[in-house]
Length: 298
Image 1 (cartoon, rainbow, N blue to C red):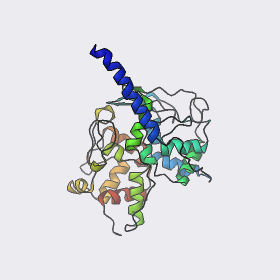
Image 2 (cartoon, helix red, strand yellow):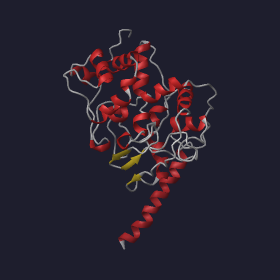
Image 3 (cartoon, rainbow, N blue to C red):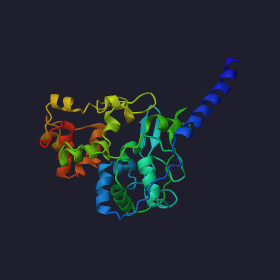
Image 4 (cartoon, rainbow, N blue to C red):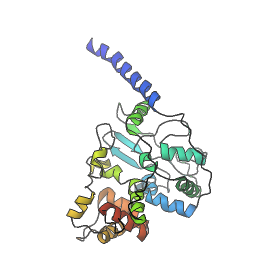
């Protein structure tokens, strides 16, 4: 009898989740159009910085660039990165630049469906209109690959996508980038990269039981990363306590080699290989200055 009673109660609870989610999710919110030309070279650079190449290219199985298929195993199930090539059926070839902007900065598909936050749109909400235009121009140069995206394989109740509307209402707040006028341009550039496209906090900030970042523990490290890994703290205090300097941190982000001669392993090794190794010396210095708060201009 108790099992029979539990079923309608669960159904009512899920219905409540959807009702509240619809109320708090701004699905009908107007989004300004992107009305500027993009630079594909700048977009390609930004795509490296943002991790697009590493997350959407299944290099372990000789997958085509940006054709998706990378599996991220988490406590919520396995996420599969989608196809981002210009294929009109399986990729984003039928999208408009405004579809792209809404997906990247708001986490909403052209069909109006919410994306799972394994896609770090909370960080990408800081991208400017010019960033979006540049990225879009770069993605238009990617050859189409007719490979369908794999469906997400999540455990209940996380496979109930409408509940994401409630999750977004509770945890997602789009945040355009705001510079600190008391700091130098280089420090602010580092802040923009770390808090925006590079989304360092996605892996270096612990999460609660619902998968949302615990913002009060920002950059304090995290357990339970995809594949069962964990990340160290990268706060100013931790980095300085462990002897990091602007030069050693910049060098490690470029090469993957630590001050003691060891190398980054696991997911951080992939971040360097697919992302930070391609960044300019100035941007690597900016990241290091920001993380260490070593701003001579402040």
